[in-house]
Length: 203
Image 1 (cartoon, rainbow, N blue to C red):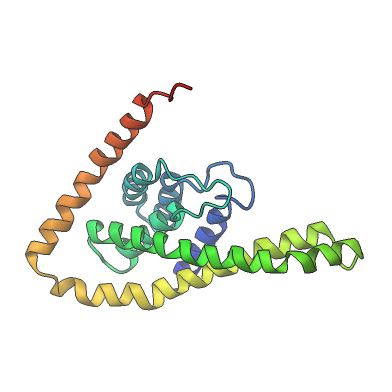
Image 2: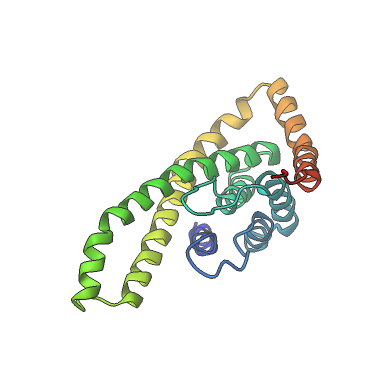
């Protein structure tokens, strides 16, 4: 369990790269999946889930006020669910997608909280009651703790719940999810081709 908690902490740090620091692409699903897969003892599982998740999130960019689903958390949660809770890879993938989508709502609330605190922070900066470095560190710590808490909910509630019902899922649902999972790369590649082939609109 200690190893899983450490992996969740690493995942929370990697997620910060999405918009909060660095932005050197270590938060891309293919990187996160590979790292979490390596740390959990199954690099190729993480790589596969990372690639599949990457194909889904290629067109999602966290620009401005847009809060898309977290590709980093999607791939990381998928690896954790498959490796630690024994979910079939196709179920784990979709649980990860749902997790990344759910966190986008948490992210919106965090941004609203920061917006409400801006006047107070501005006042404290003007009166030298705080420093810019301290404000940045507090913001990073808040984001880290929010992601980490979200992951703890996933591994303490969602993981065991899915793990307990996975053996009772009818065979036809297994077939449906497995088919959907292997269709994902083709959907992602089709979307990528459409993006590259789209012509700019003329004025």
